[in-house]
Amino acid sequence: LEDSPSIAIEMVCTLYPNGVTMAMVKVNDLLYQVKVGSYLGQNYGRIKSIGDAEMVLREIVQDAAGEWIEKDTTLQIRENLASTK
Image 1: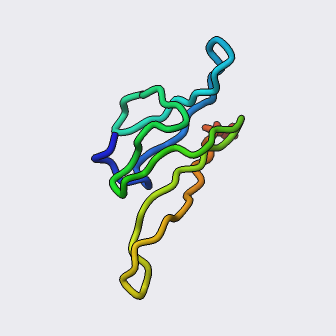
Image 2: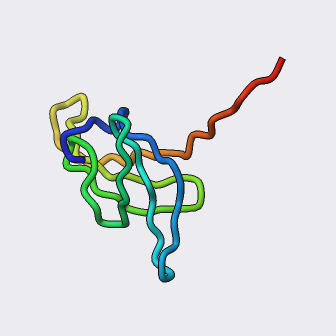
């Protein structure tokens, strides 16, 4: 999961096995179960928190001045909406 850019990762759902909050993420049509602290994404990303409809990923990126900073990215559950005509 560390080889995939964060924009290619889709949060599918939140799970609560044995009272532990986890999430299912989809990468290249494969599903993975992740939890807080799991590594995710190419920029040394680590899952900071998981909620009912989103999770926060903390990554280390370079800013405009070339300094390395921590940046939070929020991944939200995408719902598949079917349209009827």
